[in-house]
Image 1: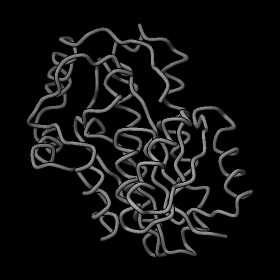
Image 2: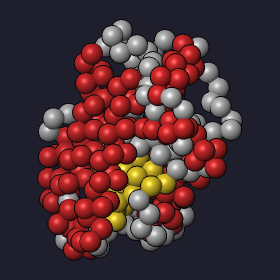
Image 3: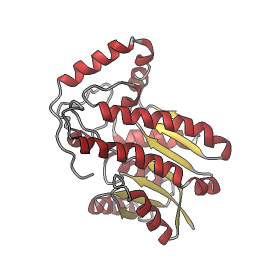
Length: 265
């Protein structure tokens, strides 16, 4: 079986940036997302730099059978993940009681269930290749999130799960790193219904996030919070009364536009 780096949500944004960083360091890649044409464009960009062209697999990981189909496709091609980058995910802005319930459950399916499945499914191969897992959470994972309740909660799960998995798998030679970026200009904002400008003090590029995440992962770090301002922000929930944090987040979200349906990603 050929060892590869599997990157989900690789058609744009942070996922595409991860693909370029891993390719630049000589990893053979399999890129996964729903939009095959966008994946192919990322693969062609990488090939144009002289690196091997990544393989692309179009898959809807939010579907109940999505991870099974992905694993079957990898096995059929003789491919075995040595590194798994769980980047696929989306958010929706709006009051949880007002948003479409099916869409919010689909968010949990992708952000939580699929990420958990792909984190656990390939562990025997990760051990053989002494590889690991990068799970993309968010600065949101440190906070309660009125106005994006399910999204914030899903990222809190990713943070907690990944830190625990890091501890469990480290003695077996498997690295687990969780990345908690703040705002990043990507397609995420349009899908989530976020129309206002991102706060400059917290905003980083997808390339910088991917680069810092890669370096932290390779050095075996448990948690990466890119950017000094974001590092400070993630400490605030420990210092301020919880009720105040909830009120502050609620006040911020109240200024935002209403949520819009998710688009393909």
